[in-house]
Image (cartoon, rainbow over all chains, first blue to last red; front, side, top):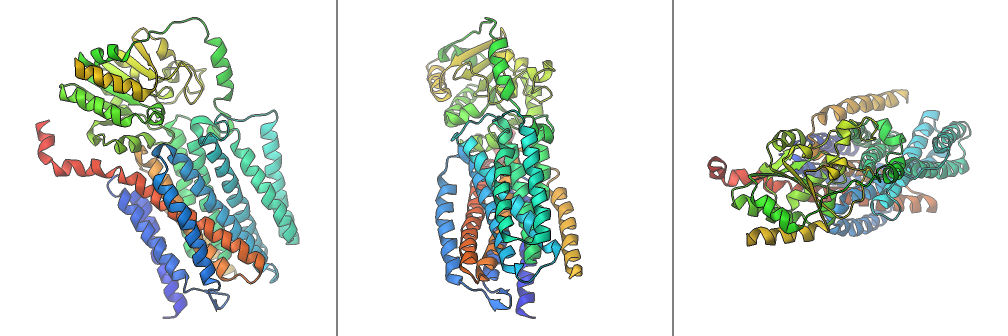
Amino acid sequence: MSRQTLIDLIYLFSATTFIVALKGLGSPKHARRGNLVAAFGMLVAIVATFFNYVDGHALRHVWLILLAMFIGAVIAVPTARFVKMTAMPQLVAIFNGVGGGAASLVSITEFIHIKSSHPATYVILEVLLGVLIGTVSFAGSAVAFAKLQELMTGRPVTYPGQQLINGIVGLAALTLIVTILVTASTSLLWVLLALAFILGVIFVLPIGGADVPVLISLLNAFTGLAVAASGFTLGSNLLIVAGTLVGASGILLTRLMSKAMGRSLSNVLFSAFGSVVTASGATTRDDGRSVRSGTPEDIAIMLGFSSRVVIIPGYGLAVAQGQHVLRELADLLESRGIEVFYAIHPVAGRMPGHMNVLLAEANVPYEQLLEMDEANSELATADVALVVGANDTVNPAATDDPSSPIYGMPIIHADLAENVVFLKRSMRPGFAGIENDLLYNPKTTLVFGDAKDTLTKMVAAVKAN
Amino acid sequence: MHNVILQYVTVLILTAFVGTEIIAKVPSILHTPLMSGSNAIHGVILVGSMLILGGATTNLQEVLGFLAVILATLNVVGGFVVTDRMLEMFKPRAAKPKEKPGDEVSQ
């Protein structure tokens, strides 16, 4: 068996591990093992690559490759290890973005490399698609990172004629691709690179708020496709399989995510969701309706007299880092014979499934976590629905008000419970920027303040009773 | 030459179906780890980056290849570590009922 055949077989093995891994990631039982399987497959492929030939030569610059890998690993490991769990979405965004950037660089370099040998048109097309998609993913992920990290406004950024301008830039990029196909000009490639960068930025600008995670999932799929395009250029089945796998599953995942919010993907991407509503929400609802507020001690007494409590956590809980105190409160209530459940909305937090991760971090028992449908049937018999730092996911406008932008989104029906308690920092609307009528409901009590402080006070008050 | 491209397109199309098929029934709680895990998998561009830098003959190619390897390593290493950290938190919940089988009966 020749060396090349052996390496190709190893690559085939790696490609297979990626498929097995992706399958494993889809089941709670095998998810972690799935990830390790993929990591192992990746390691094997990387080691094999050191023995690969390029253009009939052994790999050059081996020390340079090792140095670059060392630099990358030294930055990546501590970042991935020590960034807070609440910052997970932006971390995924940035790791995705650099992947897109790498795919783009690979395509550019390959273009420079093969240009002198007058490659076939389809080869140049693959290169250009790799550059375009990879760069859009890179620039888009960078903006998504800035939005989530609050380096810039998280709300949609809109301006007149935005769709038209985006369309023109997109069209210009396509025209440029055709031109380069004909002329094979390197200088035009740099123009395409710049244009793709601009396209990535302006494509992402009007997407804000709760839609950013869906966007990251789409950009993740883009990077996959860019990698597949590089695979065509380099003639690597491994890259084609891995890239296409991520591209295809990523697009499906993106659709599943927007479906969990009750919206279509095109609505998520192009409607600048939440930007207009913020303005109208502030003015039209200022009709002097009153809310009832209470102290943590009031709520502690209310909880003490309940037999069934459903906790509805949201991103506010994570921001306040209150998940540990919340679990303490729940344990305390349980020890008094009160049934406690957590109702988890699929998009609670900043990413689908984000809240499960955060609660698992606080060692909340798995059996107490209810998915939305289960939770809604439990809520009808609950004495208290305790909403901690959530807002949009319990907003009845999603079922009652056809004019609301979140109309149609499945929600947790906190309003079914006997009493509703909101722990909120202020009357400000939630992530989607929409007023919540439930706050004005007569059975609702509001406790203002930092969720962690309030919960700590409640724990003390429950203990004292 | 065209046979090669045809073979690649075949792989592409079949893989696209596999990719959509195997994640079709993923529960929503695993959406985030799945996104993060597939993010790590496209870090396989590191293999491409290594080949690019390993075949570089001009300074420009070396610089671009060097950058590509750094970025791809960030993607691969960061991606797997973050995903593992996320999934680590799912572990105690799955393990608990096994450790105390009597607990569930008494409740």
